Image (cartoon, rainbow, N blue to C red):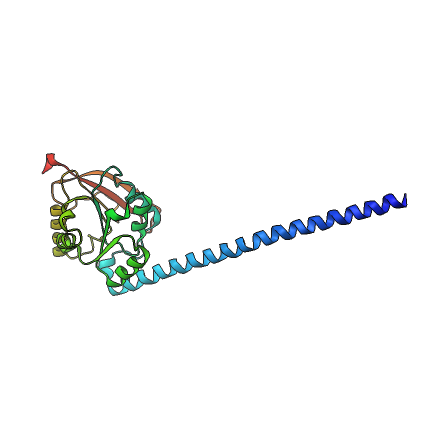
Length: 240
């Protein structure tokens, strides 16, 4: 009887030891993951803080050029990128990339980085974008002379444009600048090309684009701050 009790005690101790060892292994397995997760969250927060800091500096230095109190949301960027056709092989031109929210959405859409050309007027934002997206071409310049920038960057391929996606605050820019940009868009976007932009005007309004461009889609992103309307224009041979 005593032997049975002694054996039972040994078995219990062994079981407890195994539980402790197994728990220790689990804890050791969790520890690096926990630290990695915390480090990752810290990096993400740091990156977001850096983006907002850059954005706010640009807002203070050029409020009309930025045209918004907050950067575009990922949801708005994703909506804009969703209208880029995947079966085209022409270049995608992004205007006013800012901190790259729409740029990221375009790449996540599955667009080959070699097809994407970003044009940004702010030198600080250009430097930031080049570090964040070393695989794409980032041009420092104004959309008012877009055709010249594309000729210099793409050479003979500058005529092979399929889509222009714009985050430019057209409603807050000076009238003569808006007119120059629209003229550039009219010259570089070919037949069957498309123009995608967003506006904070939630009611449909007539844009000053050439009559060659016909609106084919419109969608409001209420979750953006402030809410924004994404509009898609198609250049059709029937209207031009």
